Length: 155
Image 1: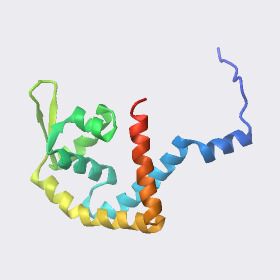
Image 2 (image 1 turned 90 degrees about the horizontal axis):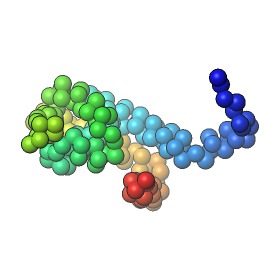
Image 3 (image 1 turned 90 degrees about the vertical axis):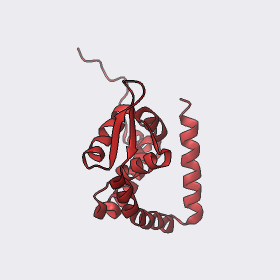
């Protein structure tokens, strides 16, 4: 049995969501930024998301997949799925931790080399975004995103 829809959306409702919905608009911005980084990093064979994961691993040296997921604000299953191609390509190594259920991830030399190759391309993408937005708007964006993450992590 289907339940009747208690409320019918108007064109005005739809427009309000499209223009004011936090999720809708952040995801649009995220897709555009991701596309820009993917294009710049293409010569390295890395996607922007893979670059950020490698950077996160490099910043901690080595750590558990759960810790990495927490730091990236991603669920563990998604992180594990995203690590598989990096492990397959020899950019990371995943080993058992002290606890049999725990997995520890670290960069390999090939992963460090790939990051070094990708870094100047990342710098180009970053500079392009800063130039397009303007330094002050970029700093404000970064501050607001940082504040948003720290505020919403409590939910």
